[in-house]
Image (cartoon, rainbow, N blue to C red; front, side):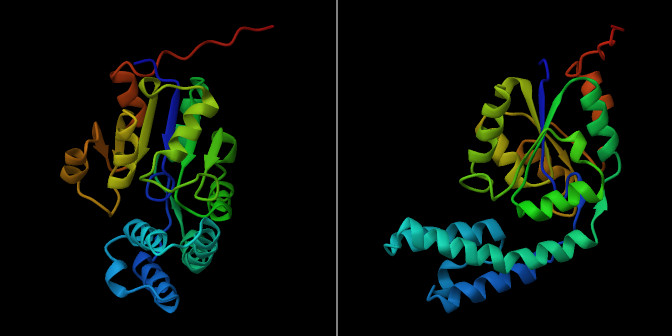
Length: 234
């Protein structure tokens, strides 16, 4: 595998934002209840499941695309204050900047695919001085649908004219692994607080690391990262 592109998740993978997802889901559920949604179509196990179920129900109730879009905007507005609160206290995952720099040094393109708000994501990249190490950022504001939909990942592949066989995904969740696997993209998992190593491996990760420090040595050992090209003097 000749690696040309690495796609990263953001929160939990490059940074730890400590978002209070339980409180976020309660706020979203309360908003949807106010809009007449029955409680039985609002699962609270994950934010993605909650939104997916709610929007599916809205479609079945005959809501127009415009009405669903307006509802989505209201839901995201309810969620973003929790994202900002988490972002203010975020920490950089060990090895994140060094891994991105090494990939850039090897002429490997890098992208981020996140379900986070666009402004929050940009803030995090600026906060940790990662912006110049990322070639493309795709947030929920850019893609037609959030992960585990492949729409954002497909945008990234088209942008770089890359193939799944030359691409690697690095994430920390079941949703990251599911999204990449749908397109046949291998996944390295960073173990955050979401899942155990065994759970990530069972979902389909090639390997699991607690930080990003081992990423580059692993890619070199697996012959996925070619020797760095020497720059010639002009």
